[in-house]
Amino acid sequence: MPTGNQHQISHDEFERLREFIHRHTGISLSDHKRALVCSRLAKRLRHHGLKTYTEYYYLLSQNDPEGVELMEMINAITTNKTDFFREVHHFRFLSEKFLPAFKRAAHYGGTRRMRLWSAGASTGEEPYSLAMTVLEAFPDIHDWDIKILATDIDTNVLARAEGGIYSHEQSQQIPPALLHRYFLKGMKDQEETVMVKPALKELIRFRRLNLMDSDWPMHGLFDVILCRNVIIYFDKQTQSRVVSRLGRALQPNGYLMLGHTESLYGLELGLQPIGLSMYQHTKKPLAALASIQQCT
Ligand SMILES: C[S@@+](CC[C@H](N)C(=O)[O-])C[C@H]1O[C@@H](n2cnc3c(N)ncnc32)[C@H](O)[C@@H]1O
Image (cartoon, rainbow, N blue to C red; front, side, top):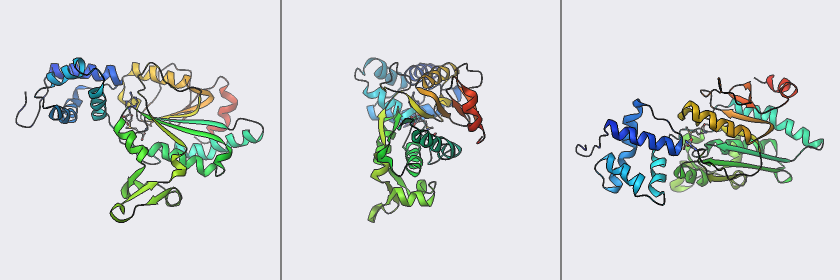
């Protein structure tokens, strides 16, 4: 029952919403997330002038044919923390090992097509970090067929990612030379912000994608997938399902990168761990791994 401005959630209301959220997003909320859920959804109740979470659940489950409120609920419930060059070892691996090896192979007749996917891209720091890493290695980018897909379930963060505007504080995570090369400084009342240059944006396609959707609309396989600090919010069964699908979306010998607290330990997924939360999809692990493991 509401007390003043504060909506409170009963045990049954939380259980119903928890199950609903899990079914639609894969996000698994433990009991100690109850207060968090309550505060994140309170603004949705206020928005609709609702007094209880039972009314809100009814709206979501019975009175939302277009899925408009579902989208808003998802946007409110997700945790979007991210940084530029977060878990920097992955970007180091790309710039020191993967990208030079790819380039070398291309000079010997290998493919010039590379596809990278930031799955759970949040406000864009991860795909832009990827784009800077790629552009540093491929200044002649127009001679290559390289694209980055950036997806997230949350439409608010995707819109911010596409906008490409970051605060001075956020930009401090970017090495100064890269900040200078790939960002514009804001003027007048935007002085405290930086904006991504078109050269970076052009490499990236931003799309909404729920990893729980039964169909992923992408065609073709990826050379590298970053799905970092996303599956940590899923239960083990959902993690296993999502990771095995990510594995199937990889090129042979392609790489999957997870967040440092996310482990595939105990999941039988046919992905070879190569250290630092990185996994390689390979039928012939030994030759490929020998060179890669030197960097771990
Ligand atoms: C904590 S952020 C991680 C951002 C970035 N990958 C990083 O490591 O810095 C997790 C992101 O996963 C997204 N997410 C959560 N569940 C998802 C789902 N079912 N499908 C797609 N994205 C999801 C959230 O919206 C959020 O933006």
